Length: 180
Image (cartoon, rainbow, N blue to C red; front, side, top):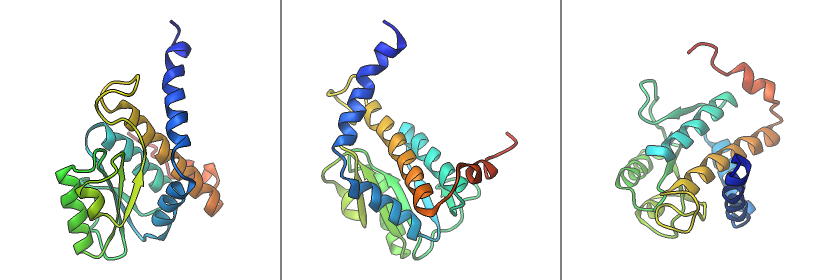
């Protein structure tokens, strides 16, 4: 079987998954990020890597965006946005971060596949990606379907922010790292 034949069912799953995401979900993410003076992003494991990529692209867009836990992460302030992952809705560390961020006056958005959970209850904005997060229902093992969707959703957010704000790709390239 060729790589193209192997990836076809994965891409079909993603297309079906994204067909189930309302346009309002993408726009809500874009508006929350655009309205925030600072965005702190957090996730764990493979979802964390997908969200690290989003934090990087937000920085490339010229946003004051940072990865939670980085050695240069600034403080979260009132009016800022914490964008965090809780794929199954109940990740204790995400719940703790969201509750603390809200106590500081920050807005909180959670990315999830869950329909309910403590993290969703602790967030101001729930961005639901209806994907498989662990067992069955996907050609990919474990949470691969959700992790891939999370990466793609992040790129859609960046693409939409570029359109919204008239930011050409060259501006992102000018902010891209040149060493390391």
